[in-house]
Image 1: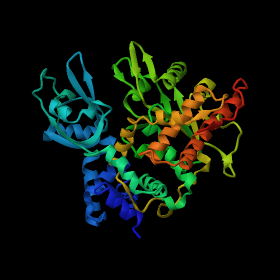
Image 2: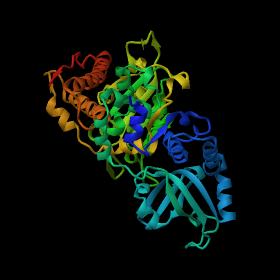
Image 3: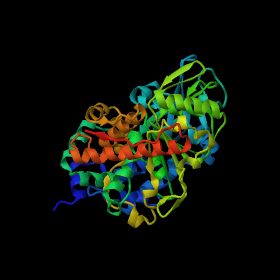
Image 4: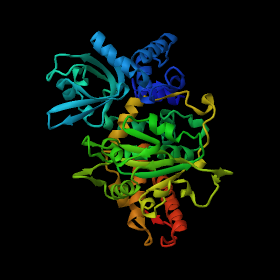
Length: 470
C-alpha cells in the first residue's frame, strides 16, 4: 500500500519537507517557515538532508542572521566595507510628504533605510506588512541631501524573498480530493510539526482550530490551558503573517496607529495578533485600548486621531490555566485574564474558547513531534493567507438553522469558526453531512463555553443552550 508520505510527496512535488530536520538545534534559531525553506532547498530528491547540507544551513544562518547585539557592528561593516547582507523581516513605510520609502530593518535597529524602486515593484508585499528575505545593504555617501554617517546613506540594492515563489490556491484545493479525511487530517498535523499518531480525531481538529484565525478574517478566539501544549509556538512559527505580543506593556500606538510617526499599528498590518502570556499583558492606556479593541472586534474598524482604519486581523488570547485532572481548576475560567479584559462586553465579542486543557503536553521530540513529511512551511503559510479570500460563511449560513434563543453574535461566531475549519479540513467543500456536523458541533462548543462564562460573570447574560439544525 502507498504510504501517506509517498502520497503527499507525489501529490505536492517540491512542496514537502521532512519535518524532523526542523527540530534540530542548528535550524531552530529561525522561524519554522524560514528554516523549512532552507531545508527544502538543501535536501535531495528523496527529501533527505545530508550532514553537508545541514552544515551549509548552519553556515548560512551564522553569516546572515545576526543577533540584535550585532547591530552596531553591521552598520560599521556597511560603512567600512561598502555593503553588508542580512536575513531579516523587512518592512517599508511610505513617506508621502517627502515622496520617499523608508525601510525598517529590525536586526540593525534602523527605520529609514532607502530602497531601490525596482525592488518595490517586484516585491510589493514589502509595502503590505513586510517580507522575510535576505537583503544587500550598500553604503552610498553621495546621497542627497548629504548627511554624514546617516541611515539615509544606506540603500537596499538587492533583495531575495524567503517566501514561496509559487502558490496556486485552486491547485491546492483540487489536491484535497486525493486524500481521505483521515489522511488529510494527518497531513495537516504533520505540516504543523506534530505526530498525528499521538492524537485522536477530535484532538486533531482541536489542534487545527488554532489555525482558524489565520484562514478566516476577523475571528476572535481564546485558548487557555496548561503549559507545554505548543499554543504559542505554532502561531509564532507557522505563518509570517502573524505577530505575537508576549506579556509586557501594550500601547494604542503599537496596536492601532502611531500619531507621532504616522505609521499603522499591528492590527492594520498582520493577519493575526496573538496576546501571549495573557495574564501578564498590561496596557499603557487601558480605557483607550479596550474601547478601540471592542469597536474593532465588532465591526472591523477603528479610529485613532484622524485615522479611520478598516482591517481584517484576527485577535487571539493565549494563556496558561491552572488545571486539575484534565479540567480547569476554577469554575470561572476568565479569572486568569488581566482586569481590563474581564469586561463582559469585550468577552462577548470572542467567537470561541479552545479547550486547551484537552490538549496533551509536548514532552519528547521523537514521540510527540512529526518525524515524517508535511507541506513546507513557507508554502503552507501562503496557503493559509490566501484561504482568507474564500467566502465559506455564505455556504455555512445557508445550511444552518438556529433555535430562537441564539443571538446574532452566537450565530456569527459559530459561522466564522465553522467556515475556518471547513477551509482547513474540507477546502473543496467535500464534507459529508456527518463531517459537517462534526465541525459545527465543535464551533458550537467553543461559543457555548463563552456563553456559559458570561452567565457566571454577569447574570444579565441568560443561561442558554445553543441548538441548531441543518
